[in-house]
Length: 260
Image (cartoon, rainbow, N blue to C red; front, side, top):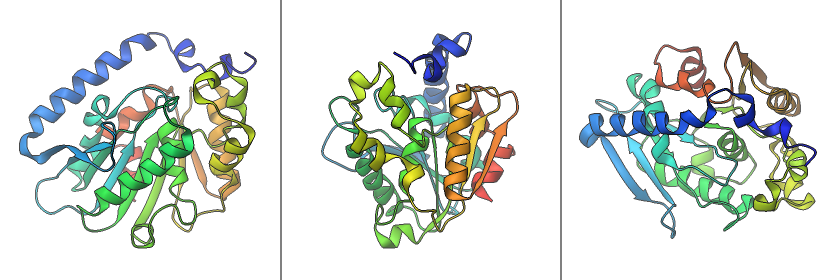
């Protein structure tokens, strides 16, 4: 369809098919090495996929970081990304990573509500400020958490910073892609579920994107920044599949921004 090439990261990044196996192996090693500081598979809802892993730092946590994975709301799960907790964890923050039900079994609006439940459940287990980040569809989902009334008031009051990475901020273009046969986005859902249509949030937000990403993703970051009056940053040389690597490095610009 008309917009397929604009949003096909797999076609844009050489060797893209190799990334999932690499992520899964690194994530599995990370969980194993963390031992009893990895609290795995905690339920936050009725379905099997409504679970999160919670990684604890040494000593008392400074607060909670929640990372929400991508996959165009139709693929992947939390088990591919555990190693990305390493950066915040080394800086003393607990990190929660939820899975969620996928399209077409549910709609994007349902996933948004699931992530709100996951953030709420994780926040109940870790005291202190809450910082949210997510990649691609996960960037969309953490941006949606900034909508008025999305999170319970006590949890929303703890939000300290949100960093959507390569986020899909306006869903309308996706209605013109072939994957919409799975996603089922219509005009009403595109309007309701697009973060660009939300009021600017009262918490600090930085829209982060790889500098070497497809133009559509650079546009999406800029659209979010313009709609909310916040900063956006294009990480030089990074594409859609390696822009998240910096989360694993405690001293990276991305981790510093998230924990600022």
